[in-house]
View 1 (cartoon, helix red, strand yellow):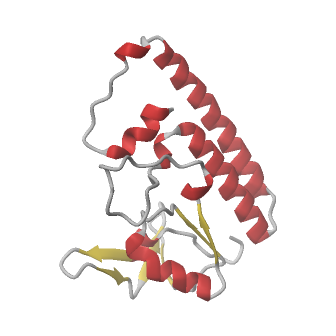
View 2 (cartoon, one colour; view 1 turned 45 degrees about the horizontal axis):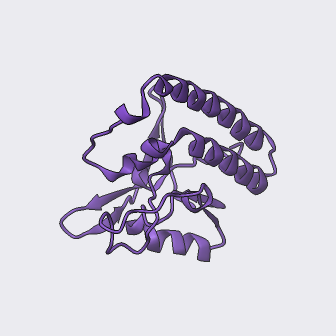
View 3 (cartoon, one colour; view 1 turned 180 degrees about the vertical axis):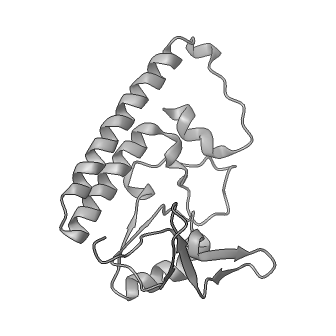
Length: 174
């Protein structure tokens, strides 16, 4: 932004410590640009936090709650893009029965781009964010149409996907 703020996701300023099961937050941040110029940065908070939601960032629950308590708007995208349900045997002991991996469906990502753009426009007062969200959504919808056209050449009874992760249910559903 014009104020020099950098918006980032938490993995850039935090590291999951597998031994303790906790997030180790950065105590210092240095931003190095492509021209090799470096700047010391400060973690100052947020007006808007965009999260996937549906339990995907479960290790960041406290940070998301804290951001909200400090006045930041928290936009959890996955619940807003018609998420798929997990089957009973996939994640029966999770907090949610909805699959958070919506980004494997290009049409849902188009909806997400519009939602995020609109929320950024609302948060900043700059309609360019909404325009950008709509433009990205249009490009993603074109990509979705191309993928559907390619896959339509394959007979429905021959469409079998073998994967080691349930996240691809969105691609299979699309």
